Length: 187
Ligand SMILES: *[C@@H]1O[C@H](CO)[C@@H](O)[C@H](O)[C@H]1NC(C)=O
Ligand SMILES: *[C@@H]1O[C@H](CO)[C@@H](O)[C@H](O)[C@H]1NC(C)=O
Picture (cartoon, rainbow, N blue to C red):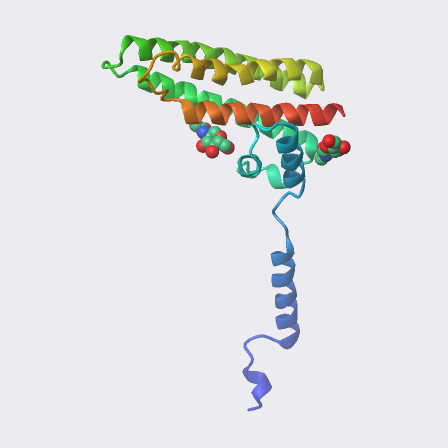
């Protein structure tokens, strides 16, 4: 028997298979808009950390295929998800019966702030969907104030640490990212 016949695949098939592998590997699942947008955002607003921005946008399953306008939708959605999760977290914290009145008051205020932020981010999403970028901007600016005000509620008393510092910072950055994307749509 000749050596050739021992091949498990016909040589032509083998070549096709290798071509297929190469083509598959060449599909780039990274969105090259994201680094550009995040570079812009972090330059425009020092509160936005570049790596936070890219990691956040890349975490969305539909971001690899998104054009600029859809990336804006994604970033507003990230604000909504984050705020929803943190409001839930605040409510879990409030179940603790051993909270000091000061911390309980702070958490209650944050619960209200996050609830308002959630209804406001829905308005922002609606305005953005209607290409009403001016209103989307106003609504998201108001959303970005919520985590700042929430955090301030814990800074008035010595020895008290906000249990929400990290989450407030995340929501603030996410809303700043969404804001800068809205501003990119205008220009
Ligand atoms: C980045 O910002 C510059 C101006 O600061 C602007 O000209 C450019 O279009 C922006 N890039 C994107 C991707 O929006
Ligand atoms: C909020 O968003 C940030 C950035 O995408 C993420 O790392 C974090 O896990 C999110 N937090 C919540 C509570 O959803």
